[in-house]
Amino acid sequence: MLLDSGEKIPTQKRCTTSSGQSICYVQTGSGPPLLLIHGLLGGSFCWRLNLPVFEKRFTTYAVDLPGCGESANPRNGDCGMRAQAGHLLSVLSELGLKQVDVVGSSWGGGVALLLAASNPELVRSLVLVSPVNPWSEFGRERVRFFSGALGAALLRMGTPFSRPLHLWGLKRMYGDPRRMPAGTLEGYSRLFLRKGLARNIVGMLRSWEGDLEALKSATERVQAPTLLVWGTHDTAVDPGSAEILRAKMRNCKLEMIEGAGHVPFEETPDEFNRVTLDFLERVDTAQQGLIGRSGEKAIR
Image 1 (tube, rainbow, N blue to C red):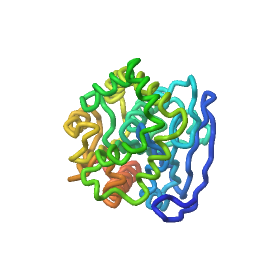
Image 2 (image 1 turned 90 degrees about the vertical axis):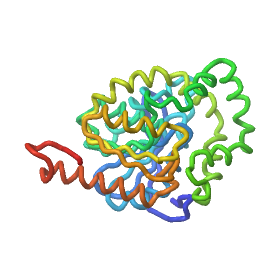
Image 3 (image 1 turned 30 degrees about the vertical axis):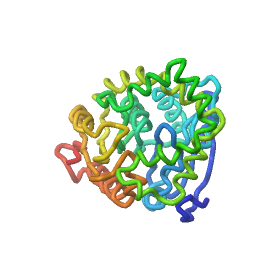
Image 4 (image 1 turned 60 degrees about the horizontal axis):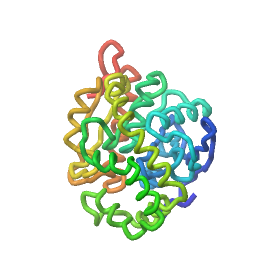
């Protein structure tokens, strides 16, 4: 497969099903399993600058959740965060994967957190990149508007003609838009213009408040060592909520990337890849009993 970054890596594109929903994913590399979960309007494309690094140490699975990427757009299926966590659980079970390290971005970070809270024996560690959480007020009014009747109608009617707004929207995700990688606009535009996407986005937004309530309790139940990664210039999920989230989790480290926006894995991929791999190596060392006391898996 040729990623939009221009680098060839050996990959396999596959699809499976969960509750009748088609889920496609890119599989690459060898080693322990690493699951990558994209954000609300993303897909496996989002990880194009990370896969060539992660594949050297992990068997990496970059999913397209139902309603996103290359997976099917269900007409009536639930695509909210809680439902997506259930879909991922089915996929991991079908693949026979256990003790999975999970990286989730934004909305996908919420999905990852819900998956880990309900399946502590399955998720070995979490890397949450500016995850959606109940303590960020950014965008809440927009969610309420577009999940209502008028906003949903405007979203459905306007999405097919939204191409002129794509560059403006993407620039807002970067602390410094000049760092946007080549091919980013073209790749995301293909995702944004998929037939049926607006219908599924409306469904996701209508599940938003219920999903946030579920995240409140899930946050305190997560047992897996967790790394939070946030850009200091994030305008999508409040960086101020990072410390609140860190304090509510049992075993959590926070890494702020100075100057980055909402997608540091794209804007500052070298730094993101480094802090992620360093964290996963410490998790591995801790689980081998070389860090912590009395067998505890403490990441400091």
